[in-house]
Length: 55
Image (cartoon, rainbow, N blue to C red; front, side, top):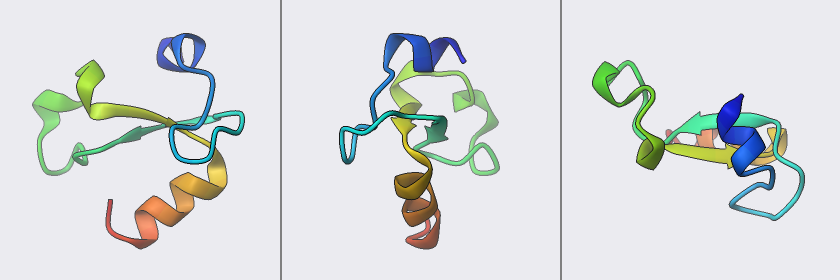
């Protein structure tokens, strides 16, 4: 949740973010789970779209 405090807006649409998205999924590289460069603030709709595309 600290990431959302620092970056409260969705990086895709600019709306209010509610989800921290892992650019590279934790299943692919657990070492990047808390790496700030691997985290994106997204709103729920953009997060759902990201997972439908596979990222």
